[in-house]
Length: 517
Ligand SMILES: Nc1ncnc2c1ncn2[C@@H]1O[C@H](COP(=O)(O)OP(=O)(O)OP(=O)(O)O)[C@@H](O)[C@H]1O
Image 1 (cartoon, rainbow, N blue to C red):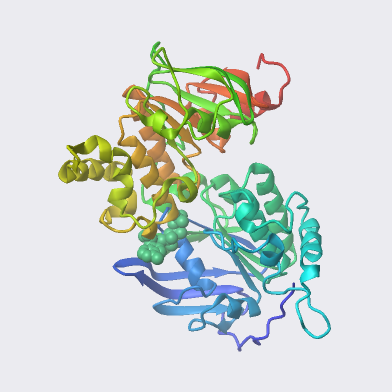
Image 2 (image 1 turned 180 degrees about the vertical axis):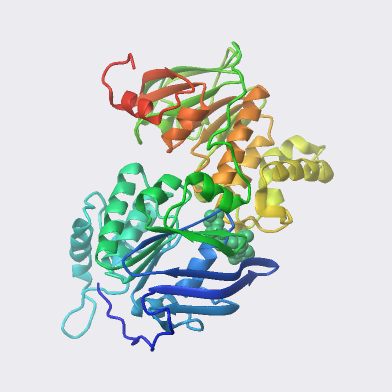
């Protein structure tokens, strides 16, 4: 799958001979939005370089300019000293050894895993014809080389989970033996085990002299992996450092400073039960009991895949319960569909992490995306009260700092990824739901916004909402939750009083056999 660079590097400019990638003075606008302004960036061969910044800071746009998906309005881009500013198209960059994995996965859904993997370099016979019969065996071998043996090369890409698609995309990038690898939020859709797998391969590439550039909103990943970090704010580079503390980074990224990564939770749980679940089963659930009180933030932790998602989906009616009972405010309720969950008298809302698959209607405006869940409530005799809707939407947009002052009549898919997540949250927060199921809602969200979301969760609990909270970042559960239930093999294996403070205690309880953690 190796493609030899066929464009001979042009004589380099002074100072750029040791650089793998260089962008200078780059501007790029989308309509009225200036995504990059006088942006500069440089990365060397043999380094892992993190690109950090708030949602909408311009990271993805810079990556798209670097790998030729879009053209800069102004400025210069060089790859190993070769000026490529006016050359667009990933194929031209591939010839220079650049491989990229984008935030919005680029696998073709109707093709098989093997066809996707070998798209640019299929096995050929002597006459140069593609040997279709060899596609699956060659792809299996490539996957095996990267330690991936649980993905069938003959499966259609559309049938894979988001995490599996991400893995295939990454193998495609890694297997091309590139000289520059650019990964836009590669870990956002990966479970922890695969994050470690990717980290190993990134380090190997770096040690082989490859330049690896990646973006992430998880500071501990940046700290663990990056040799240098470049911080972007409002489309411009604000710093490039070898060492940077999380607090300094957040200040550089947001222009705001925070006392700590997590706010002190002020909400106090009441004695009133909001949601009581007994012996719930279905999917991975093997009899879950829980009692969530008004004003409480109840954490659901444990190792990945122990039934957390099934618990949230079942409580929201998006997955069928096979047994057990659900009580809201002490009354038994039937929740067979999300419609049952959100109806008055039940009031359960679910905020998912995957805004693309489960939450956002991209062609609709930001305002309409937020207002969809409340339309029926604001309608009188079939007419929607647009001005009431506008006021409510404006207030939540302001509170969550969605889109940095952008008009809410713009299409939601022009927002950056993290801002799209905020739109999905805002929608549910505007409803009358009194029980909120928040599933990994800070995934792909920048540090300052995470902080805003933590404060919002606290405010909502203080107003009496009952909140079930799961995060793939165990630290969050340890700091935000009044109590933590640790799931193991579809059951509650331990209950810890919060704030637990130390994520290690939750991890320890996740793997401990006894229930007395
Ligand atoms: N196709 C587009 N049309 C309109 N605006 C766009 C488009 N693509 C990006 N933008 C805007 O450009 C700005 C920079 O977006 P970009 O996606 O580069 O940010 P980012 O730093 O990658 O954010 P995130 O961390 O949320 O992915 C944002 O304000 C975004 O809304």
